[in-house]
Length: 330
Image (cartoon, rainbow, N blue to C red; front, side, top):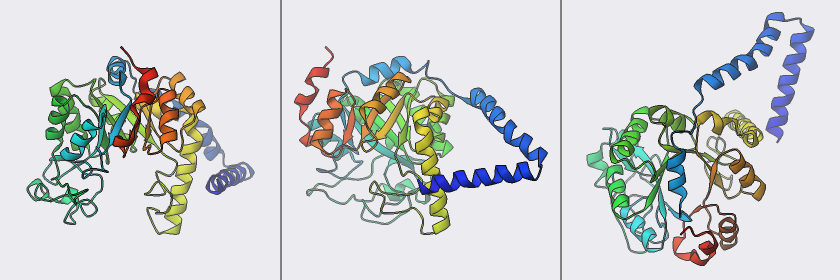
């Protein structure tokens, strides 16, 4: 909140100085910017008309999904993890997408392989021939290799699992490859593509408006790299201060749904820390479906199931399937 107050004071002082100093040109600019912004908003905004029927099919009988598969039983973002998620009864698997230096889309959450693999390589600077040989660190004595995106898509289609692609950057080449993978398989009603980065869903809708897209929302997207707000993205105090201002602005305008409407997304992916009954109702009234992440608490699971909101979890084996019985579609 202090970051927002600082920004508000700064704008107030600048406006006051412009009026006192009779800076006519600047005053005109201040008043013209909102008008110009509104015009550009409607020129470049996307809509969801072409993807609405696909979204309806996607959410049919979708109760919960495995966050990076079942990372409690197998290495995250691996085929072994997705198999465990299927065995646990997941309707969907969520996974993270990066691209190798030679243009191969693959599954990896981080920018490097250090945390999950037996080597420390920067993904976007390493060729696929090297990456495919990396052994993922074992989870409960189970290990696997880094999979390619097309292999995972084929496996999910064969095994009847819906998919949630979490794209980590706005690499245009990768966005176009993802759109092509969906188009050539005609799996528009089986895949949701979401990202924290608004350029990703906006660009995807421009390429193919039939693709179901989402925007992922959290309170500290710009300022912290973890869910507990303990690891800032930068140690530079001024850069961190600016990032917190961006987060404050994001939280203030979020209830207006200006960004999701402009992007033309079908889904808002909300951190479970942001979820409330009012927020869910408002989102649905604005025409957006809601998915919550990452829910590892039994009480939150029951609440979300009662509100008919699908969720992602790391502990799919511990989800009580009975909580969904009232929402079954026959």
